[in-house]
Length: 459
Ligand SMILES: Cc1ncc(COP(=O)(O)O)c(C=O)c1O
Image (tube, rainbow, N blue to C red; front, side, top):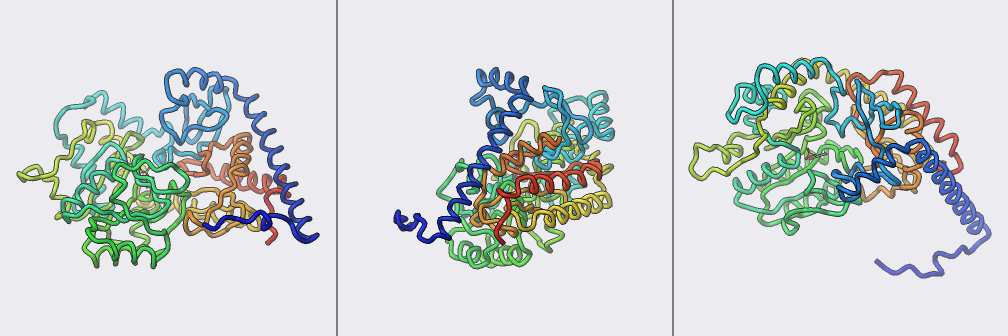
């Protein structure tokens, strides 16, 4: 990048001087609002603060899951009931975090409770054997998502690992095309401001999301390509939906060069009864799953074409090993099956995501002309505050987040009783009351009005 000459940054005309003064004015107004909000947060949450001071003695930063760290200290939640969570200082929040899409059933769904209690009483915890229930859960997921074969893991991260291992064995190649801003698990994150933590850096080829030319060049220009791994909506990257044309082009290019097309539906499978792939008209070679499909317990799965999945068939002498003590644990198999078969039926799924779409539309309308925008699909969305006031975000390269503004929003929505991830993602819980969604739209509107001088764009 060419160095910026100092003269370029200096105001040249009276209009420039005025604009610069306005920017500086709004920057200091933001800083003042943010430090006042933070002071109120500290005063309101002494028990969480104390808990953080204790936790740092045992855990680096007091934390065992980086995403949950928030400055000056994280809130410590004590319990949850239905769609609400309650912190150690006694505040009640509507749970918009929804455990990053895993918590779709809320905190005390009677069907999940019944599955857990009866599994404990009549089945036992870990039987150290194959069980009928793992076949039942596998058959249900296979049928919902049109898979020939499936295997379970303990997390979405493991699902990615094993899907990639299968693709590498099947193709006898190693390289994998992924997209900037993509997140496929703890050691598979690509850009979006998070420090990379990949296990085998040299094997990744990065394409630009929602850019067909870039995708084609990456896929068709890489020798020794085993797989293309992509989300139909970048979840951790900020709920950025892919266009259908982009996804179809990725699928076509992968097929053209004989690479395994892996669709990561760890977050997006809940967006339609047959997953996001059914909306976008995709037929991936393999799909990865996770989150809510375990009924609230640790879960992951990968599946798809039988010929690819057969690399794990233990009846074959040279089969790949696929291990995991808890892969078929009784709680996950029973709770996951109960949730999907009795609660999240196809009809409920459609209605729920339609509710999310309406919610998202209202939020998009109310944020027009401001630095705030909401992105997403169905009942999974995210808030952004960008310096340039972007309203239609297509890839992480286009997002210049104003983190101070986002932090201010987070502090003030907490005060309104909404528990949101600090990075701004929202995953609705099934039983979220409509009045709470309407009230949130009003709160966002009031926030933008209150801070108009900071959030308004000149457009
Ligand atoms: C798209 C995607 N893939 C994979 C994962 C990893 O899942 P897990 O956290 O269960 O390892 C996530 C987690 O958020 C995800 O969003």
